[in-house]
Length: 125
Length: 104
Image (cartoon, rainbow over all chains, first blue to last red; front, side, top):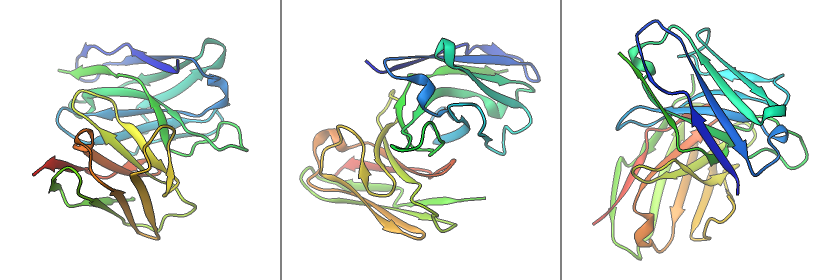
C-alpha cells in the first residue's frame, strides 16, 4: 500500500524552528518528486515547497522562501521540511504529497500530487 | 504571481444532476499543468484530474476536465452522494480558493 506519514508537528513559539518529516512506503520513493502543502483551519490549500527526485530542482512558495528548506533522503525514503523564523501565519496542517510524475522523465516536478499523507499540525503561539 | 479564481463559491445541486465548476487563471497555462482535487472534511485532498483532462487512477469517468489558456472546467456528471464536497483547482504551485458542491 502506498503511504505517506508525516511527523514533527508541534506547538512552537514565534521565531523558533521546527523540522517536519515524512516517511514514504509502498512505492519507489527515489523516482518521484515530492511536495509539502499546508492548510490553515477552515481555509484552502497552500502549496509550500517541492523537490525533484535528485534534489536538483527545488521550489518554494514566496511566503516561505528564505525561511523554509525542503530536503530528502532517498536511502531512508524520507522527505523533510526545515522551518525557521516561524510566524503565526505558518500555522496549519502540513501535508506531505507525492508528485504524479511523468512517464518518460524520472522524478520531475509536475505539481500534480496523487498521494497524500494525513498531515501533521504546526501551531505557532 | 499566478492567481486562480474558482466559481461559483458554492454550487447547490441534487444527486443525479451535473456539476460544472470553473477555474480561471491569471496566466495562460503553459504545457498542461492544471489539476483538480476533491477534499472531504477531515481528509486529505484527493487528486481527480491532472494535465487538464487526465483522470487520476481510480477516478470514476463521471469526472472530466477540460479547458485551455486561462479557462478550465471540472464537470461531474450524474452527481453521486459522495461527490458533495469541496473542489480545488491547481496550477503549478497555486491553488484556487475552492468550490463547495452541496446538496440542494
